[in-house]
Length: 385
Image 1 (cartoon, rainbow, N blue to C red):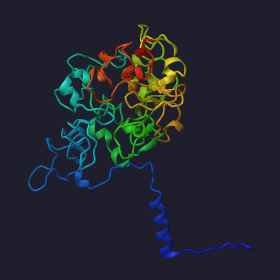
Image 2 (image 1 turned 45 degrees about the vertical axis):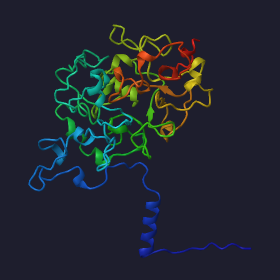
Image 3 (image 1 turned 180 degrees about the vertical axis):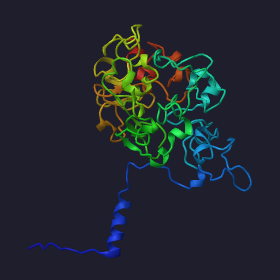
Image 4 (image 1 turned 135 degrees about the horizontal axis):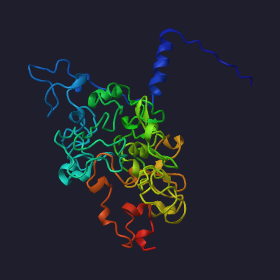
């Protein structure tokens, strides 16, 4: 039977309906721009019904016509880890379930060592122990915590465009929430197209049901790493015309812009800084941006046989290629996946000292196969092997 090619000419309203149907059937997977009622976040005259139109706990007018500052939107201190009205993730709350970055409330309940002491949390939030960032490069990053104090966003902070001392806080985030992307963040040239607004960092933002959580093997963020740490002090390679950014676009490289000595490969200061000079053990500081070995105890990440290593959110790894950021992977592959800062630490705050993901004082070598903490990677150390 001869097959005939049928051509249908679609014009006018029918064509418009078809286009709209196609666009809605296949939404843009990278869009995470803030949506909803403008009044959730903004107030035109800082007034409504004869009273200041502010978020609870906020005082005085805020920049960008906002009802609150960073913590006013993201640190309300309620029992909600995600605000039900605005959908904003909460970095300070009383909920038993923390989000991926942790919970600044642990600083109040456990002390300064539990997290980053951001001034946004409390204008009197001074660190009682540290005078500068641990591992800081003293001749270039000698900002004193006790005098400068770190912020959520800006020059002495993490989010937004760092490197503009005259612009901090809300101003440095202008436009990012409205243009924000999610999913695979592979461009990382601007605040809005960088992982979690950390300018210059690549990654994959969990945008599913548990959007803001590292919940389990099937629901977590993916982080970008490298197979070799940065060599030498960050120096001018981090200070670009677009602000301070990690030259390798990794999460550990980002942390190194303040905590350099913990993440440099060699000894640029001549005082024993760096991880030990190369990527081979023994190290003087725990390495980051190095491959999790595929031999010995490491080949059994999570104490499983190679090839069946299930991802543990208690000790996340980074992916060394853009392809590894295409989606959420439930497994870890020793020999290609990467150890990073967030493998051990939380980014905001944790319930344990030094912002660790577990109680370091409770990690006991030869104490039995508990398969927790350090032993997720060092799988034989708790067996006494």
